[in-house]
Image (tube, rainbow, N blue to C red):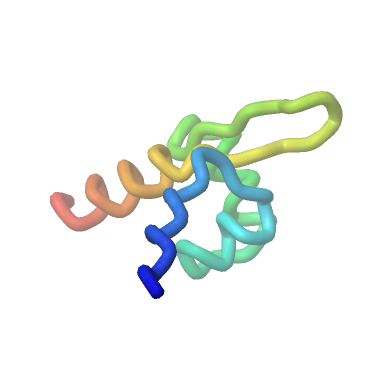
Length: 64
């Protein structure tokens, strides 16, 4: 039996998931969204965080 290919990384995640991924609380994440450090997308009433912006944030922090 051939193993299933790995699932692709999601493009966007929920706020709680994004906060967990980078190890901060929701309040801090919302502050990062407001300051433009992290990109958020509104889908109807739902707020989603782009995983690309999380990767960029970590990259910028490592370079600083």
